[in-house]
Length: 115
Image (cartoon, rainbow, N blue to C red; front, side):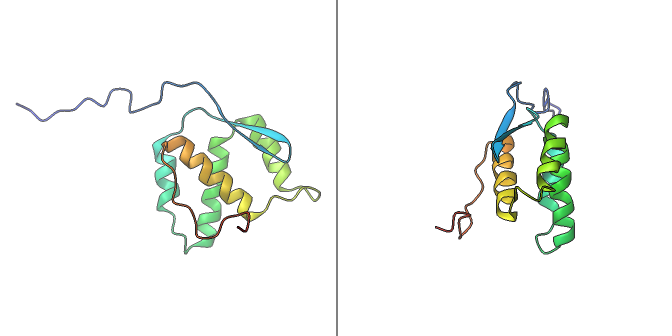
């Protein structure tokens, strides 16, 4: 007997339900499903390499957010009136990764609320 396994549709989730988050009163829509390759690239970036980590975070948002939401999200990140902290960007990224992988990430020792 030959060794064989059919991976069907590649594990794609059969949901068309978008992933949505809210920031500064605006809703941002994300794609329903995400290529595993992007998540692997995100994981492969060393936390010790701040430049690569930052570039990968922006690449992640470029792929995850719908076109209209990405335009508004980038404008919000450049706003002089509405500040989006590093902690908020990190929290959003972590939540999105959890949503796409259906796996909660380990909590950091210090919460973003300072508790």
